[in-house]
Image (cartoon, rainbow, N blue to C red; front, side, top):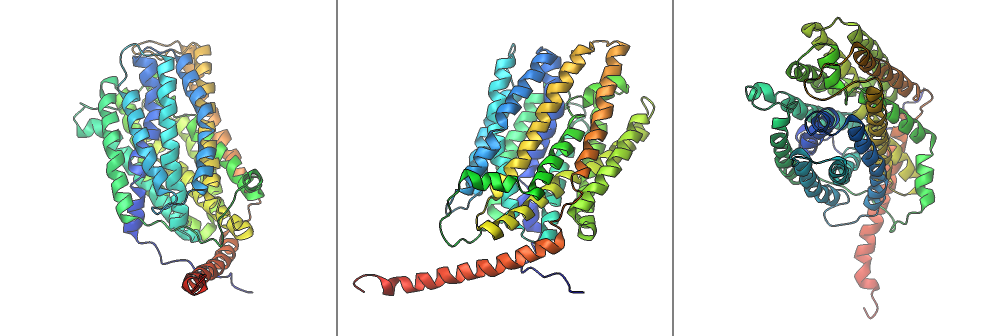
Length: 472
């Protein structure tokens, strides 16, 4: 039996390089958490915007936001600057993101749906530039099949650590700052605003960006993008990513409602339960990345999906107001869910390599825009569907309102069925997936040989240039 071909990747990335790059996740991951869990409750429960209006605002903006990532991705693939391809986009997105955070986290009294829509649009535009730039940058930073699992796993872990720090603010500040309380939202916004430039500075100083060699200036046609996203492996990834986003994503907007009103925990206690769920990623992300070296990325995702279904069902079966068993259950669910994002993102980079080998065109940014777009579609669907259902069953989100048993039952049903169903479907998408470690080694080996030839040709051309000039 012949052994699989060995690619010729660059030197193994040092941990300090990966951690410097992962610093971009320090503000980005907590922002996703806060926008998904706390912001809907902030506007519906404190600012007086109705549940239906909050759901409509988030859904409308997400539908607008869906167009951002493909457009930004196409522009990134055409970008050539002395600073790199992706760095300028991350840098440009940062101030847009900072200003939108300030406006959303510290609104004036009496703001309504129009205000939410305006600043959510600005926030998600800046976020597209910032996070899509980081995702695509990671694909050229780590080129080996297993290095990518490691890199995206650490990105997830660093972001999780930052999210845990935000969730522990009540403990660290002796209750003065609590993400679930409206009085704390402006300060939390300022913490995010400060974290963005600080994290960006570390990444820019200590992380390189290598542009893949090319023999001539590339031109892109719509058919290139349609062909890339219609490939069987990419179709599987897109469908799986949507399902894996919808699964855990359906629980986020109603997390505080569920654990406070249905499970009987205070808002502060529910926040600490979220620490166990989010914090599980600190050990879960590296664990799944290491397991992927044995099983392959797609098989590891499938195993995590099965484990998620089991742990989520167990969590739902726990009796009301039992803190320790619930905390253990939340940790188990979060541990399983931490496999989804980093491994799927690493798989996109593998597809981008295969496309570049076959077409000589680097479509990395557009491919990443597809999976970031599916995440946004999932968020739009979840909040746009669940909030109207809650309103339909009579659930009220305002502070200090007692809900009827029927309304609580509707809340429980929303939290129970969707996560397991979507995650199981997401795992099933990877049956028949063929871009495993062996195939990717073949791709990288061929790419390294071709890139070396391009570099050598460019060097010879530069040497020959002066002698070939007219009049020489």
